[in-house]
Length: 96
Length: 478
Image (cartoon, rainbow over all chains, first blue to last red; front, side, top):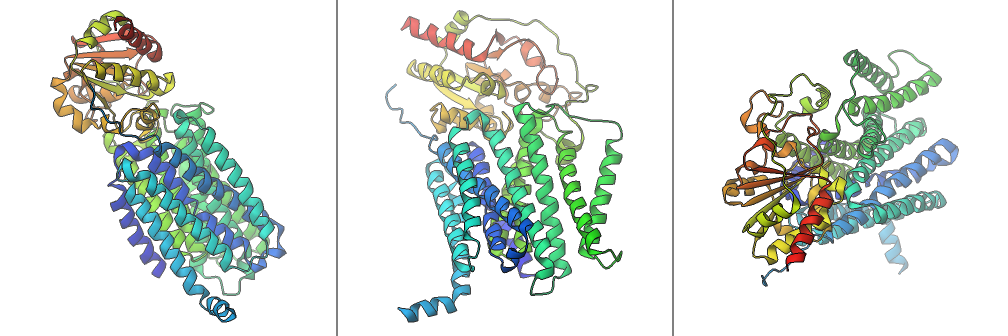
């Protein structure tokens, strides 16, 4: 029940935060949230560290694949977002 | 020193919990900084720091017995991710985001799957609630994965781009949903049908298969022009999948981060739907663009073409110019020449703005990123609501590869399928240049009366070539 409570609060917080993001930044927002959804990496690491793992080859393959896919999201997501955000510049235009 | 180490070991759970809280706070602050382009980059960095400490503390917290497997996964994923992030062209961002949504989904599916396999060996008894969350993480993860792959295929042209409909589609979908519920119930309450363990794993594989088919069936009927909605929605799903995985392994950081992403996708989906004046259900189920029966009144009148040198003369005398880019600008890769023309106009004493419709392009904010890449200052990028009230004072509107988002039928023609959609009222400007390859209809297949308005001039040809011609006209006379 506690987890559900956290979920609902986090959704409301997310709705508040995201509605403040200007439309100019919607693409970096999406790639940035791709990176955040790579948090599944923490989940994958947890299941890969489980003691029961040694018994099954299937779970190892599953967990390694989960780690790999989630890492793509984390590394790729943050890097591409940074690359994009670095391009958003405000230029001084005093001399016309 | 030894005492300290013991102390840390004893308080492991507290340290982990506190680190996860810090990490969640960094995600939240990171998103908060995204509210302005000037702080956004710092926000992204903070978010990345949050992710880093969460991963490090997780590695530290468990008894690392399979470190080599972790390294293998991280190295493979890291190389692919870093390579992709470096080489992707800005015009291909929609494809990349679509693919990443799918990766998030499949990762959650795998976490759910391995939890299912490990469940019988678990020390604590597996509750029905845990089984429900496993089913959810597999289902949402699977739908997100194949749905995103189809979206990626449609965006890159590998898959049929228009809405794909076939007779009996509804029946197939209902059957799919029924089998989803059946397999889901069987897995969460295996006692009901008295199935053996062997049959149960077949049921579980069936659930994975069904979730994959569901993802394909959900995205195939959606046309290319509706991709901004689909990508936003899949973005939301990838967050919800992470959330479900968080419930499976009882981890509140996954739940918080997943919920933030889920909420982000929902907000964007909502904005996209509003910008098209359509409900989400309409986008998902109507097969927009495949139905040709309701195309509104046929637009009639005289089309007035213009050549580059005449267009230059008008632009040269203009004191206010507004560019309206659309997907055509991305296709023609015209953003750099557009910026060049914009700068020449500015040095000519003209006020230049770029009006960007929320659904221009193939994903939210697509045009903004392209123009930022071309070095356009972000304060010149304006939304329809900012530019529409002052449209009468604009001397020239230059429409580059946009069609439906400037179609006055949305305002004037009640029979038009896009009637009621908020548009950029370019026809209220003194002169409108429409850059277009030919007179064919836009993506939605709707006639555009804008082309026949008395103040509209058509500049036919490739957008990049046309703008380049204008740029050289400017340069030649200076």
